[in-house]
Length: 241
Image (cartoon, rainbow, N blue to C red; front, side, top):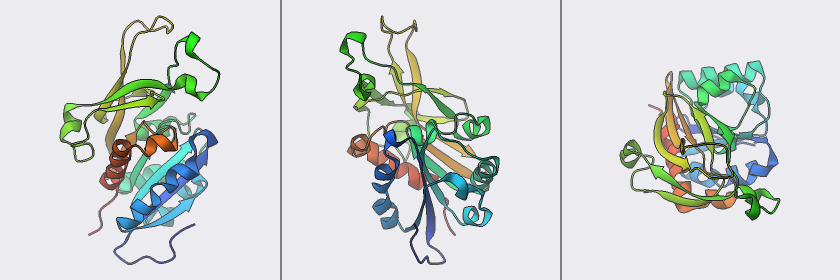
C-alpha cells in the first residue's frame, strides 16, 4: 500500500511491518501514518522486508520505519537495508520491531546498535501467567545529552508500567535516555543494570533512531512516548535539498 502520487520534493517514508503479532505491528504503525503524511511524507507500507532488496525503491526512500519483531531477513534484503542507510536513508523504530528483529543476523545488530536480551518479570508470587507478568513500573531517565537533544528536549523522565527492556549495546550509540533494572532477590544479577532506552546512531550518511518503549498500542499512545518517537522519525529522515 502506498500513496499514489508524490511530488518531486516530497519525502518518502517506507513502513515495513510484520513478525510476531504480539507487538501489534499493523495497529502500532498505523498510529504514525497520519503524522508522517502531515509532515509531508508520501507513505508506502510493506508487510515483508523483501522490499529492502529493491535497490530503486530504497534509493528513493528517505525514512524507513520498521516494526518487525523477530522474524528473518535474507542476505539480499539485509545488504539493501545496510547500504540504503549508509547512503543516507533514515531508519527508525521502537521496541521489538527494531531492537528484537532478525536475532540471527549479526550484521543487522551492528547496524542497530542494541539487541533485546530480556524483560525481567515480577516477583513469582505476583505472576498470573499472562504478558502482564513482565509489566514492571520503571522510569525512562533522560541523560545529560537527552535533556538537550531535539528528540527528547523538554520531555523529562517518563514513568511507565510495561515491559522494561534489558538491551545489549555498544559505544557508537548516542544515548538519550536509560532505564535501570534493580537487584531483586528473585533475579540472578547482583547489581543494578542500566540499559539504553532511547538512542541515536550515525551510520555512514544515514541516521538510526531507536526507542525501546512501545510494547503495545497504549504505550505508544502515551503523549511523551509518542512525541519522542515522532521527533525521532523526523530526526532520522533524510533531508531533501
